[in-house]
Image (cartoon, rainbow over all chains, first blue to last red; front, side, top):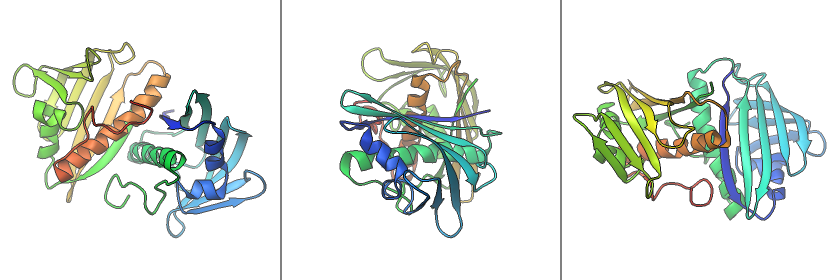
Length: 149
Length: 149
């Protein structure tokens, strides 16, 4: 099954800031979508991401390893996404936090997968900007790769 | 074998401009790297892309279908790249040229593949900018995703 892979290096003295940006409503809303809802306790059980109206994704938090790893499973959203997993691996290399990103379990390399691969890169750059400058580019102010998307 | 997939939509009345940007030294140098050398006749037989010194990629042009498709095979460069293929498919959807990009044939999902996936997205946005505004962000003025890379 094809996967979407990405990697970025973030100027940061510790992976803790990036971990916070992946596990708190405030952090997630600052780089992915302003409409982020974290349900449950510390780190969340289910996170609901919306992009206007009902459009979006529900993620079950499968694993949390502080400052190292976050693993989500998609439990609601477009059918191509449901059942896929989004795996964030963090490590530190000198002055850089390295983020290895994998969106795995796509059943087919459909057009939507092509689109999401490019779009994930934009959101990773938004995360990078958030960590480095304090300001990300979350939806609805995200970088568009095709018309309004 | 894992592939890198991307898709962007470019505001353009015809895919011809994008095709030119993928098949001429002037076009390629305006979005990928300033150090682009096209050897051979119309559209090129081999294209050499450099990123300072000897660093870079040599591509054999395997297929050219005007305004529709460009296919390269990597014949020189980092060992992870040699033998892989880069497939550009163009189509028109109203006012948008749709670019489907596939870098296929990676033997293993190594870190360098993660890096290149994100980096390709940056260069596709550079191509988009070139077509839409007349100005891309080719190396050495490319968007950096990790320190100077």
